[in-house]
Length: 500
Image 1: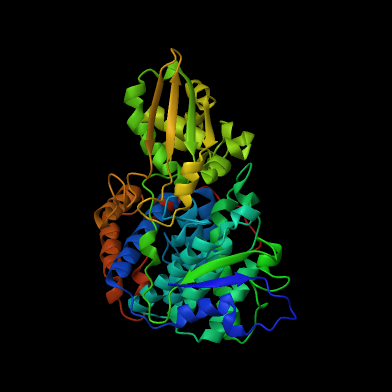
Image 2: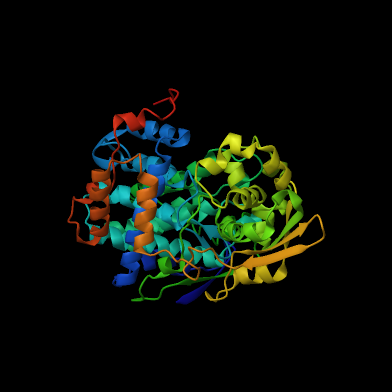
C-alpha cells in the first residue's frame, strides 16, 4: 500500500491533476491487478449477506416506498429490484435495493478513523452491471474496487469528527467501482469520483436525536448519485476539482481545515485489492458497536441472576461508542420507549438491557413497541450508562487487526454492593471472535431471514447463482436477485402516491 498525503491546496499553488486524491482513486480503479481468490470468495459472502437483510426488510415501510419509486421508472434492459420481476432504470434499482439492504442495519461493517457499511457498494455496482450486460467476473472486479476505495478512505479520513455523514466516502467508492466494472479510463473515473463526492456530503443529523427512516435512505442516495455521476462523466461532464484538496473544497470547509493533512493508503500499481477481508458482518440487527455488548450481555445474564437486583450498569467503551450510541451523545431519545426503531438501534443502553433480559437479539421482536415499553425493561434501561475509556478508544483506532476492538467492559453493581465485571473485545461473529462467520454462517443467515419471505426453491436458486457469480456470463447477472409472491408483498404497508 502506498500512502498519499492529502491537504488543502491554495488556488494559486501549482497542483498537477495526477496528484489529486480523486485521480489516485481513479488510477486504482483502472489498475488491472487480478482479484485474489479470497477477495472473490468474500464478495460472494457479502452478496449473500445483502440479500439476507433485504429479504428480512422487504415488507417494511421505507423499503416499500423506495421500491414504489423505482417501479415508477421502468427501463429496458434495466436492472432488477429485490422482491419483484420488473426491470427499472439502474439508478432507481440502486436506490430501492440500497434501502432494502440498509433498512435493518444488519450487513457488513468496517470501522477505523471513520465508520462504514461497505456492502452499500453492492446495489449501485450490481445495478449498473445488470443494465450494461456485464459478466460475473466484471462484477467481482467492480466490487473489489468499491470495497477497496471506501475502506481505504475510512482508514484515513474521519468524517463524523466534523459532523459529516459517513456516506461521503461511499459516493466516491461506488463511482470508482462502477468505473472498474465498465472499464472506463482514468479521466472519466476521476470526474465521476469528484461529482459523486460533491453530491453526497451531508451532515450527521441523519444519525442524531430522533433518527428517521432517512438513515436507511442516505447510503442508497449516495449509490444513486454515484450511478448518475458516472453517467454524466461518460458524457464528458466534469466535476469540481480538486474536490478534496481545493481551497474551497471538502477538506478546507467540511473536514479538518486548511492546516490538516490526511494520509490515505491506496494499493500501488499491480497490487491486489484485498480491503474487503478487513471488514466484518453482523450477527445481530443493531449498530456495529452493539454487537459485542449484545454477546457480552448474553454471557453475563446467568452470573447476574435476578435482574431486579441491579443497581447500575456502566459500559466502559470507546469514544465512538460512548458519543454515538451511548450516554455521551446526550440524546434523551435514546431512553425513550416510544422512539423509532432507528433511534433504539443507536441506543446501546436499550440494546444491552434487552439482551440481558432476553438472552438473544432479534431483528423484529427486540424492537417491537410492546418490547420497548415493558416497565421492567424501562427500569433496567435507565440504570445503564456508558463511559469513555482511553484504552478502548486506543484499541478502536489500532491498525493492528489482532488488537483492534469494538467492545466494552461491563460493570454491573448489585443492590447488595457486589460488582460483576466482564469484558468482550470483539463480537462472536467477528473474524477473531468465538464463532467467526464463514460461508456456512452467511448461508444460514440467509435461510433464517428468508424464511416465510422467499419460497424455498427460490432460496435454493439464488444461493446457487450467488456462489457461481464469477462464472456468470455477460447478460446473466439478472439472476442475482430474488422474487417473492404477491401474498408476501401484500403484507407491506400501503405507500402514499408521490410525484412519480
